[in-house]
Amino acid sequence: MMFRRTAKASIVTAAATRGGFLLRALAVTGSVCVWTMSPGLVHAEKRMAVIPTQTIYPGEIIEASRLEEVEVTNPALTGDYATSTEQVTGKVTSRTLLAGRVILMSGLRDPYTVERGKAVRIVFTNGPLTITAGGSPLENAAVGDLIRVRNTDSGVIVSGTVMKDGTIHVVAK
Image (cartoon, rainbow, N blue to C red; front, side):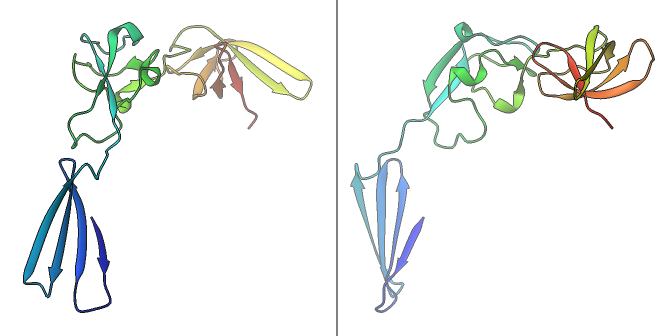
């Protein structure tokens, strides 16, 4: 709501939008109130949302063929819902997505690059020196995540960042 106070008396002009109409109120000394409705003055931008065309279960990778973009008709819909199929394609859902319901971004994650217990390559680089070893991740992780990995040769647990090729780059302490 927007208010503007004029210099004379106590005249206040207020403007608000209700159902695509611009409502204006002019109050003079608090006793007289005149409302005018002007259709077409407010042009809301179309909001889009992504909905699944069929139920998608937790752990499934979301495919574009199972999605549809629709116009948002509920003005009360707010939050972190997906607005384009590019935002959600290739992501993994952590909760059940029902057909016809908006997809919340908080319920999605990137697919895991490394999985707990599966063999990975640990890489440590310091200048021209590069040391590699076999390791076993102690948790699931996506690209860019910082995780703990057990060196399979020594049993020492180190922390490193997951790279796109599935290796873990360890940082020096």
